[in-house]
Image (cartoon, rainbow, N blue to C red; front, side):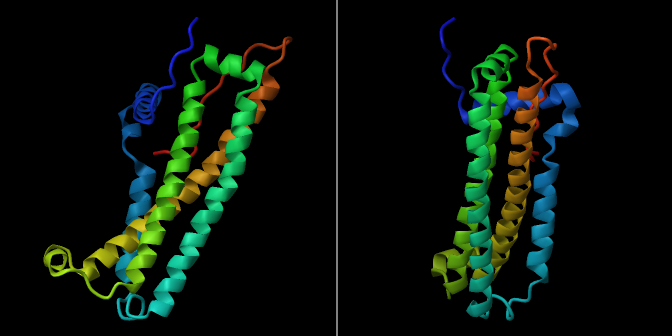
Length: 203
């Protein structure tokens, strides 16, 4: 059988969503974790007083630097899990099993998804760091999006993205543990195990 081209990210995402709907129902289409992170991030951003946070760069800069550092550490640590996931999944015995049951695409997609969420969180926290030292916006921009409003939005989104990235970092470890477990179950004297691709926090 000829090797087929690896599906793109969007194609894999849609396929994964279809599989989720088939297994769990339409409620799985609602991104509960993302909504929860956004709700918490928005609540915190509105509670933060402007004059004690944005009005003091020595506070806001330190805060966003800490978030940026945290997201960088999460990304670096997850790369270790990614390497182990690919190492285990590419082992001939398990790779053959995953291909036979059309599960390989799922694992590759979830690693891509986790990596994307962490890179996004890293970029947003860096963007927030820039807003700490911005004193004003061009008049054309300020007329439609005041700086104070943008600051609240960037704080909310960066907090939400960082929380979601943390959830997905935990999910990366879960994916790795699942593959280790399933790999150990594959032996000639045992039947094939029932494998489910855990989404590692996606949703």
